[in-house]
Amino acid sequence: MRPDQRIVTKLPLTELWDETGALNGESIRHLDESLIRELMRAGQVQFIVATSGAKLNWIPMQERFEFWKTVRPQIADALKPIYLERFPNQIAYVASEWRGRSGECLILLETHSLIHRIHFSGKATYQELARTFYQLFVECCKLSDTQCAEHSTGV
Image (tube, rainbow, N blue to C red; front, top):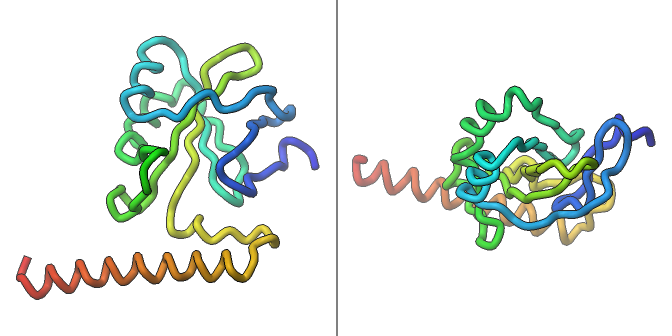
């Protein structure tokens, strides 16, 4: 497959790539909101968004500050469970720091959402799909319970 046609098939990623091919390197560390702010203050950073079933989205450098403003409330702690209902639009990003070909700072944001939990790579087992659908069912029930509680209390 040509590098410019490659898509994300599994998260977390073990390597990054661009239109010319794979980057040598690996994830350096997980990042939270405050660490991302520190990296942005220290110098230029390049954001990359990974979403299952899509190409890596390399955010243009000139758009990084505006982009950061939009995703900042959706940065999740990689070491804690992700409760999507606590994030805007039920989309969360797990952030990690990487290095580019020239040593530049790359910040990878891996997308977590209800829609992307169902991964159709052709390799999913029945048990994986059943577990995913069960998790979706449980989350929908929680949402319904919340809505019911708000309705019954008049909130």
